[in-house]
Length: 349
Length: 281
Ligand SMILES: Cc1cc2nc3c(=O)[nH]c(=O)nc-3n(C[C@H](O)[C@H](O)[C@H](O)COP(=O)(O)OP(=O)(O)OC[C@H]3O[C@@H](n4cnc5c(N)ncnc54)[C@H](O)[C@@H]3O)c2cc1C
Ligand code: SF4
Ligand code: SF4
Ligand code: FES
Image (cartoon, rainbow over all chains, first blue to last red; front, side, top):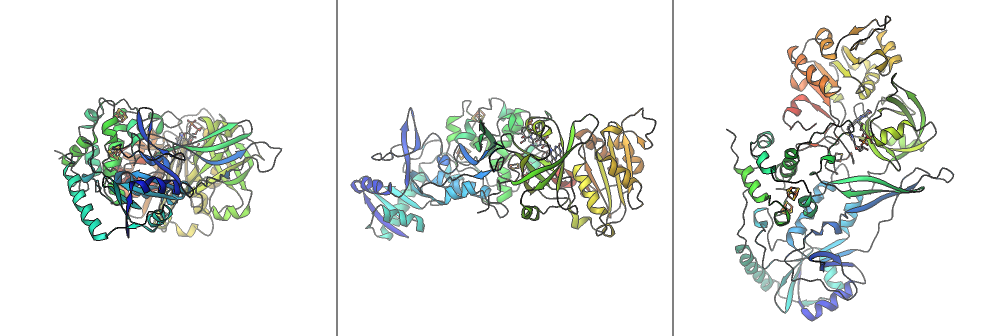
């Protein structure tokens, strides 16, 4: 571990330095909202924003990603044979990612990096990305990260943790990747690690005390899937949902995708695109049969997947980091905190 | 890192019409690189993604048996985009196969047991694979009695008719073919729905007897109580599911029933396993 102090003047020169080695991403204004963007040559991350509207998952898992190319011209060799695309890019650095969004990558990794199969696209992108997290001094009212095994100063999944000190940042490297990045940026003014720990500790306590929103998850593991699945509240939960998919698109831990071929003349690519369990097409069979044809079954799938199936499958907690995006963005105010509490306290009669 | 989404290139070796209404065709594929055939080592009950560049991929049960070398075979029902395109493809065309995917029938467990295979309609593909596998001279001694109950709407809708006739003549397997109805005077087998024939022909339950059922939902719905009546435990009833799939390797998220991913944890489950999952299939 290495701790440095980054003077705000050195902040911008360091970032420009990073841009020769990394594609640098950070929060930036985009129309009316803030999103993670690849920063231009003189552009700095805007760290005044509490968090971006969409999660930064697209940096590792693009909304649409090319998998293979092919051609169908039978007069040329290699027709109808898929070829891997060269998706290689510069290593990426994400400045100002929040601890919840960094932890989300670790949860999603359980899906893409398994002992049987490895998803090369996700793994390559994740491994070449360095996450420089910004501790949350002022969490939003919808955040409930302290209930999800995360927190405003959580270090899980980060390579560097930054704490804003007004005119400077304290930067604590957590991995060799993080250390390399600090060196590349020539952020090297050393800072006493013990002092840093105590500043981080009091910052953490202060930030955590501001998080008023809590959910209970302690009973979820001991309840049977079928009991919660058959609970009587799902129709009520789903009643106002319009299946718009906003919750899944904005969520840092939602990873479902579709695979589609696109062609133009004899040239083609196979792509994968974000998909959503909220859409009836997600599970529709060719025969017309649909195992989740009803809205209630789709809404239930989303919450059961996040709060029960994932927990049972991996024993690594729930598949939600408490970022609050779905709570803030749902057009009909469906609130995962409330549903989680209902599931947690449900006692079948 | 090996890319699990990359199909093996194959050539269509031959296409045959499998049923009288031409809604099913059987495709034999040959791997362009013979080494790929070795990598594609499969067990009966597994499936593969058939990959038609420009159209997409579809999960299809492997109908050939691991004991048959030099090709892989699939029988495909025409329903939508990819299957309709495939039905218009011809010998010599190049496409891809990705797999083998999913678990298989539990062959270790089934060794030394009586096997009752119950199939309906065109869901007979991996059952054919299983029968050919068990009847292989090297494997037949590993199993006790084998019964097959197989039904279709009419005689012309039965898959693999030549093989059925051949198995029918053997004395180490009991074939019970049935059709829903027929006016064919030459039809010398059963007439009636699969559940009814199961009730009449299936051996009664024993700890050493396992039933494997594949068929349309309605057949499964009515066969299950028959097997229960015959005394079959739910962990002696084995089924294969067909949820909509894309990746086939447990990553894209659409095929789940509860916490199980049908593509990776399945498609083969015992009924007692299914009793513990939501009925989202
Ligand atoms: C494990 C398994 C084994 C199967 N074995 C066979 C078989 O041996 N023979 C056979 O004819 N059919 C089989 N099916 C069903 C077959 O996969 C679908 O009929 C086929 O995907 C329909 O594709 P389509 O493009 O023509 O239809 P469309 O309706 O145009 O479908 C578009 C896409 O949706 C997906 N899809 C649609 N329906 C299904 C479905 N029922 N199951 C899975 N994915 C679907 C596919 O990705 C498909 O490309 C099997 C399905 C599974 C899951
Ligand atoms: S954002 Fe709200 S309305 Fe839209 S799909 Fe999600 S829960 Fe339903
Ligand atoms: S489910 Fe909602 S609160 Fe939880 S991680 Fe996803 S968007 Fe954030
Ligand atoms: S088909 Fe993608 S997870 Fe099963």
